[in-house]
Amino acid sequence: MPEIRVRETEYMNFGKCVEISNGQADIIITVDVGPRVIRFGFTGRENEFCDNGDFSVPVGSDEWRIMGGHRLWHSPEANPRTYSPDNQPVSWETIENGIRVTQKTEPWVQIKKQMDITMAGCCNKVQIIHKLTNENAWPVELSAWGITVMAAGGLEVVPQPRRDTGLLANRLIALWPYSKMNDHRVYWGDRYITLKQDPATKAPFKLGIPNEHGWAAYFNHGNLFIIRFRHVADSPYPDYGVSYETYTTDYMLEMETLSPFTKLEPGATLSHFEQWELIGNVAAPNPKDEDEIQKVVNKYIDSCGGCL
Image (cartoon, rainbow, N blue to C red):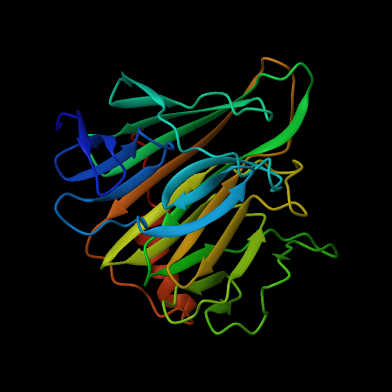
């Protein structure tokens, strides 16, 4: 099995970073700011994540910057609480097959964020354990929120719930005020919802669903990126009860997973798991052909075995 290599490096204009590589693929985590997992890709090839985000939100005398990549937030979204600036260095240490990054406790909000990031040697899989610790003197109700900002030009596939609930509804879709049901980028299929990232369309679009299958996929650069997480049935979730959200504008597409709402007591920690997989040489299916999508799902997603 290939050895996992961890080394300090610099990446673009993000300053000091840490690279984790298995010799086939690599991830890069910012430690001068963030943290962000700012890159995931095959070594020497394109970054599957967006790393050129210039959007920012003023927060007091500072600002929160999107930067791109993968980040840890907590839901429900609110300004300024959600947008606590993360422009300062973070601490990091090596763990088996990866690193642990810890952000200073957010001022006023008093939530500490931590991520354990590890890579498999046998295949191009990455595991993220997100941790939120409540350092307030009172309980806080929140949901861990992993947000992965994908590079432009790809196609996302999100599975719809398929449970037979008889006379009762078996699915819901949450939509934001700016989301148009007839947006040309989205296709409302019977088994899958597909969303195309269009660099020529700046208007934002966002949807959320209870993603009972616990995965979503993004096709770009001739590769397939899969994100897997744990959907907990019959648990309360934010935004009308959704465990997965996705957002797109002209320069990126976000894949967002959520944990159930949790009443976090003082000193308690909430953990939320994600697994990523990158598979090369997989062509994007026709976004309106669900049989074609199903073939890809059968081959690369449903057949997956665990190795992390």
